[in-house]
Image (tube, rainbow, N blue to C red; front, side):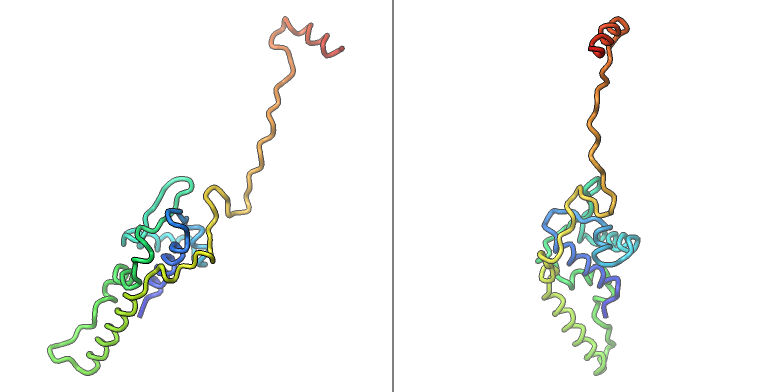
Amino acid sequence: MISSKTRLCIKVLVAMASVPPNRPVNVQTLSQRLHVSISHMESIMRVLREAGFVTAARGPGGGYCMACEPDGLSVWAVLQAIEPTQAEPPASGPQPSPIAELEAGIHATFSQFLASRTIGEFAQLDEWTPPTPGTSTSGFRLRPLPKRSMPQAPNSVFQLSAFGQLRAA
């Protein structure tokens, strides 16, 4: 009933709800966490941003943040935003058949169940903490710069003889 794209959107929102509030998560971190390619994750983030579930923060230390409270966002609202045709009840003719009534009942139960569940219910704050901004997740590390040394020489030609005598002594 739910497409793989919608399931992945829900997983991304749950992963983002597991992060402390107002802490951006970048696409690379999410793709590693959910085992999805970066390009596919970028397309999912675009869908979530256009639906209004996440906001983007540019620059170093940027990424995506939840645009709403995870405890106030129902799974049904996500499904309606991502797949509006899936969220519509099945159409029935002027004389509903028993099968159409069954489908309508299944759809009503399905929508009520998903409307009663929120993204925040599935967040696990202890399970996953993304790296803090400024730390690298790759193996590349910068080493400290060497200490700058000042040359020990005279400033002018006129001090050259005095410098030579000091060095000799």
